Amino acid sequence: MKFLTNSLAKKMWLTVTAAIIITILYSYLLSYLFYEKIYVDNVRDSLLTEGRSLASEYHGGALTEDIRKKIEWYNSKSETEIFIVSNPRELSACLPFEIDYQTLIGKSEREELLKGIPVEKLGYEKRFDRNIMGVIIPLLDDNRLQGIIYLYVPLAKISEITRDFAYLWLAAAAVFTVISITLGTMLVKKLTRPLLDMKDAAEHVSQGNYDVHLKIDSKDEIGQLANAFNYMSSSIRKEDEKKREFLANVSHELRTPISYVKGYSEAIISGMEKSEEDRKKYLQLILRESRRMERLVGDLLDLSKLESDEYKLEKMPLPLAQLIEDAIEKYKPVLREKNVDLQYRLNPEVIINGDEGRIEQVIQNIMDNSIRYTADGRICIRLSQERDQCLIEIEDTGIGISEEHLSKIKQRFYRVNKGRTRSDGGTGLGLAIAEKLVKLHQGELTVFSELNKGTTVRIMLPLLELK
Image 1 (cartoon, rainbow, N blue to C red):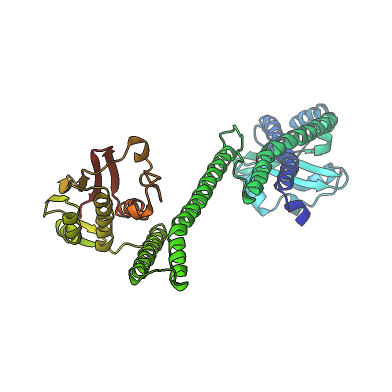
Image 2: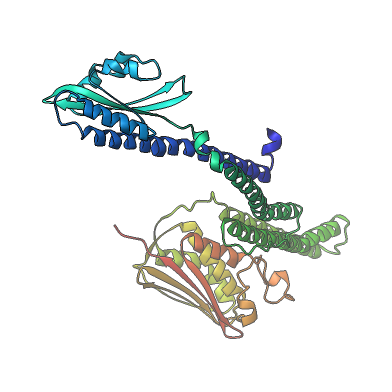
């Protein structure tokens, strides 16, 4: 049984075979239904019509010799056996087979006859080796049963009825079987071929070959499945490429600080520093690079958490103006050092439903970038309300970003100037983290920039719904 069910093609073959068998059985049962409902019913109707027609010759009183002769003459001309008797018990002498009067006409049948209702009888007779259909027509006179007309005919067997076209039916059955097998073969191959292609393609994908593309033109469920598979394969390939790029970027970002830490540590251990000042300088470099690695690992952990489906924001009503003021307070010494003028215009009535720590992180990540690439300039922060949303704009007059880099600026580890040293920049993850946090708040982060003129970051967040 397992051999027959370990393949979809075999299962479909079993289905087709079962369908053929069921069809043949259905046609066989249907033929008996026709026999019962059409042939037998026709015989019954014919006997009733014939009996009522003969009964119309009776006009009351005792049965006369004249009506008996008419019935006998009609009997000789008809294929139906017909008898007329004044007493139903006389039938046993007329019929060519044994009959039990009590079985033929019981109490309930006699009551029916007295009401003028014909009685129908269907039973098997050994002498004829077949069923016999009989009809008893009452002859009434003033509600008295003066006699009966009994008509019966042996029913033909279904094999006798179908004898004339039996060979034709067998030939048609053979042709039907051949056509069914042929069409079944074509159907099974057509339906299973794409599935086999998908199976082979899935094996290639499982081995790391993501360039597989299924070419299936059908628009049915199999075609939709093929399109879904192609989309899945493409998505896996992209994710794999992102993973490889991500690991390469992480390795690249960590290689420099690790080499610094390793080099200066070895220099200190081997006593290469010429003075206490050199030793202190080496230790400061080691500390700086250690902090850089710490920030990088922290940002990576943040991204990992934010991209997890299980991560949940701790939302609460937040007065956004106050949160922004608190977040930028710590930057004032750095702004004075870089001679950057900070301006802000904040709507104090804006309240959102958000995670305080994460919204502050978004502001700080954007401010870090603005301060890093702005000197002797201006940073302006604006908070306003637009219908059911609020708008945060952080605009600087820094070095700006060219159009070719602008679409990629929010990618992980992306650097506009590949030649800049890592001491001039952050981890390259700040905007990626900020955008992820904004999306988790059902908001949108957009960057506008023009080279040598400055950059503007726009953040749209939904306002708190008051119930």
